Amino acid sequence: MQESSQLKVYKFGGASVKDAGAIRNLSRIVQEHGSAGPLLIVVSAMGKTTNALEKLYQLAHTGQDFSEKLAALRTFHLAVAAELDIADEQTAATSAPTLAVLLEQLGDRLATLTPGDYDKQYDQVVSFGELLATLIVARALQAQWLDCRPLIRTDHTWREGRVDWPTTERALTADVVPLLAQGPIVTQGFVGGTTSGQTTTLGREGSDYTAAILAYCLGAESVTIWKDVAGLLNADPKFFSDTVRYPEISYQETIEMAYYGASVIHPKTIKPLAVRRIPLLVKSFLDPSAEGTRIHDCRHGLLVPAFIRKDGQCLVSFESKDLTFISEENLEVIFGALAQVRLKINLMQNSAISFSVCTDFSAYRLEKLLAVLREQFTIHYNTGLELYTIKNYDAPSIQRLTEGRELLLEQRSRQTFQFVCRGSTNEATA
Ligand code: ASP
Ligand code: MG
Image 1 (cartoon, protein in one colour):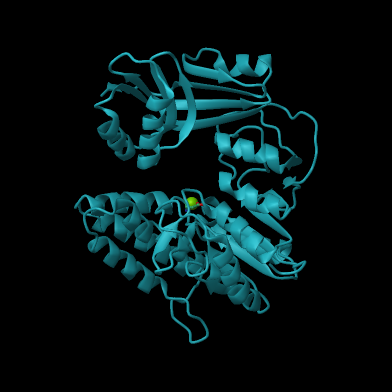
Image 2 (cartoon, protein in one colour):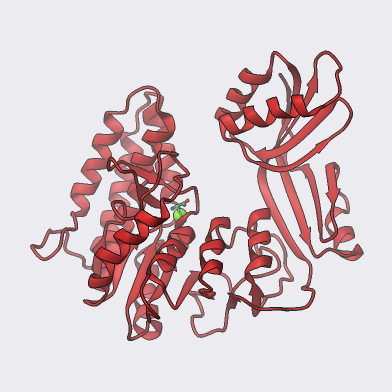
């Protein structure tokens, strides 16, 4: 780690680079708000490109025609580059590839997928969103383009690479510090690499986490996440009309909100920053002079209730077939299977002979889970559900959120009230 570095890390997500106009806005922010000192800019894939790549991958993996979708992705990126007057040519001064080369590599990848290794190949394909976006942004800013895959070292946990911190810190310090002295750097969020040079991803929406990894390893002064909202709010303004912004909030509170699904920050982002006491600023790219939220080491009284909504949920209940009680032995089998298929528990509850978990829905992982546990348990599941969490709840906030909803499961602890309810119905029994 650098001693008392002046380094600032900026992170721009998909919405802030969604088209040429957004990238021009980003350039203005960097010019007007970027410090005179070293600046490292982390960029996600443009707009909904990651979803588009997931669809492309799905088509290619299942042997369907993906050419139209690939052409659309190609046209989109080339059109943005053209609108920004970016010449797509390689210069001797930089190791950056051209967009044309990247797009060709993506096409080759998709055309040469092999059966199996689903998660591994996913990473090799879906990571192209960040490579393309950073190339465009770096050129627009006339900044240095950095491929962070050889530097952010992870293990082989595809789609959720676990960071090898000492190796990453050494590599970043050695390679990035000298580059920072030469001017701003643009690099990819969301991606990393294994010892053998294969690409990994850090989990959907993982670019925030990348910003934290870089800040931690390089001893940054602060991280700023530029969002389309005014800061960290007590609810998502897409679903709640009367939101309140927290001007400052502790790491601890923020970690919990992110864990429960507040989509404003990736849950893994806070810990590395808290460990090195690096403040995290959440600011609006639509109103860059506004105050935003400062997440740092602070104390505050009880906050207003926070409403957190997670959709795409699935409630799975396991009943032992021989009517034995849910015991440590049974739970061991269920937890083992959940870990094996990599389904994360968002909420759980048990009764005498039944155990229920609420997880993010994935047809693929659920199918695998059923295959493992079907022999031993009768399994019921509902999909298309929503999980609501009220942090720092009170009676009116519970009333407000539960009114008119049929709760499939509810749970409360001292500070947190959670429930699962129907979005659109989908039921099944395995
Ligand atoms: N582009 C990736 C995603 O959409 C990572 C990110 O946006 O943070 O999940
Ligand atoms: Mg994204």
